[in-house]
Every structure is written in structure tokens, then in C-alpha cells.
Length: 148
Image (cartoon, rainbow, N blue to C red; front, side, top):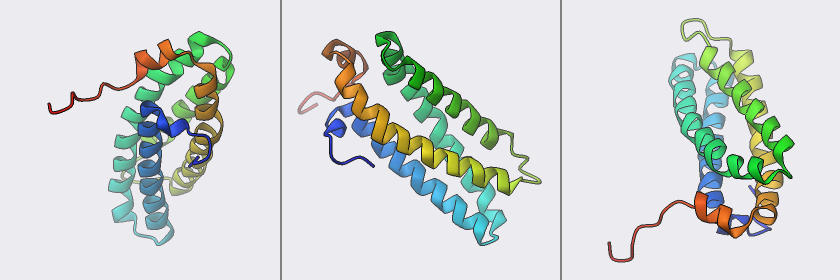
């Protein structure tokens, strides 16, 4: 994960980066289970990973990505990342739980890792530069009131 540009100081990017870390941990646990032949463990791990990905990608696409698409400079990159979301979700969601295609899952995990790396080291730092403060105000998660 990126630790050098300060983009994580933006609350939304900080939250998305934390989710990336948890998703990466879950993907690694799934990869290890498959590699060790623990397929009985792998199916629930696959479902857990997909359960993390669905709300995460929705938050990215409906918040940060929507603002970046509207701003325009990074619209092509956003379109590519959204297509990768669809591809990765499609593989994980289409796996037959009774007879899983583990090589397809492993390839999707590799793509997921590259995808997260691209967001962390490319899109997130660029978003900090490209988006105006008004956009960040729209997509920044609400913080609870002090003492509330």
C-alpha cells in the first residue's frame, strides 16, 4: 500500500486503503487454502472475499470513481478499473461452489492484487491532485460529532 504521498490522510482514501488491506489478507488466506488443498476451507473463504469486495467496489464506483469520471481527466482509467471490478467479481461470483475452478480463482486473485496495486499507487494519489475540495466534501464519509 502507498505510504509516501499522503493520500491516505483523505478519509475516504484511508478507508478504501484499509479495506484493500483486509481484502488482500482474505485473498491471501484463500490462495493459501487452495495451494494447500484445503478446499473445504476455500469455498467459505471465497464467499467471505466476495462479501468484502461487493460493498468495497460499490463505495469506490459510487463515490470516488463517480467524481473522477465527472472531472474527466482520469475517466479512461476509471472505466478500466470498473471493467476490472466486473471481471473479478464475475469470476468469483460464477464459481460453481460444488465443483470450483480453482485455477480461475487463483488467476482472479492475481488480477485483484494488480488491480489494488494500481488503485493504491496510481489512482488514489492522482485523485488527490485532480479532484477539487468540493468533490472531496461530497464523498468524504461523515464523521460522528465529538462527544456524540
